[in-house]
Length: 284
Ligand code: GLY
Image (cartoon, rainbow, N blue to C red):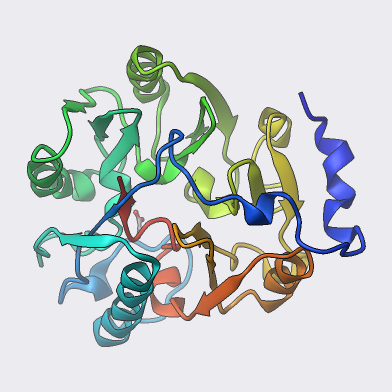
């Protein structure tokens, strides 16, 4: 197992060309996902859940930013599939929270926020056309934003949204697909992937002191710049580019210096509602 401390200097290594992980195409469960399931921004987006902050959200700006995101997914070669939006669900653009692909199965979640539970049905209806589905049951709760898969390990955040019973149900379904589950405590942020962003098959960018870092032993860890706390988000694309947030230039520069091919977009309005680049799609 890697020792986290050994990887802390990783960002400071002089660039000696393209890093090994930067050349690895993103894979999920060893497969190359072809589909991207998305859900447009609802007109009620201004009522989306927000942990901190008081500024009014703008649905039009969020819609433009979401369209740019979808263009990047298309350019990368994904076939876009759309779940119709629902104005009764202000957070429904954050579709990742409603289902997790584990091996050949889609696990339909039971979101931790009660207001988000009606989001899952229409997503499950589309996924069922492509994959077998299983459903998280009461009293379990899981948000997909708390689930990160690398190799044969499922990392799951124990957070305000994902509880112990939800993690047990995730463990049972993961075992049937040959995956181990590692629980990671999440502090001071919404989801595991608010603070731990996969940027390659085995590498993550972590916001320092925001999750139980010792649980990430099996991953190569890079750190977000301290001046950009929780502003960095990323999504490895199937064409080898890394989609990143424009709001985190220092962290992005570190990735470029070790060889990542970067595409930076502005999703600031979606970030204002605690969203990130992984939240906006389900890849399978
Ligand atoms: N606004 C995203 C969430 O709270 O789930």
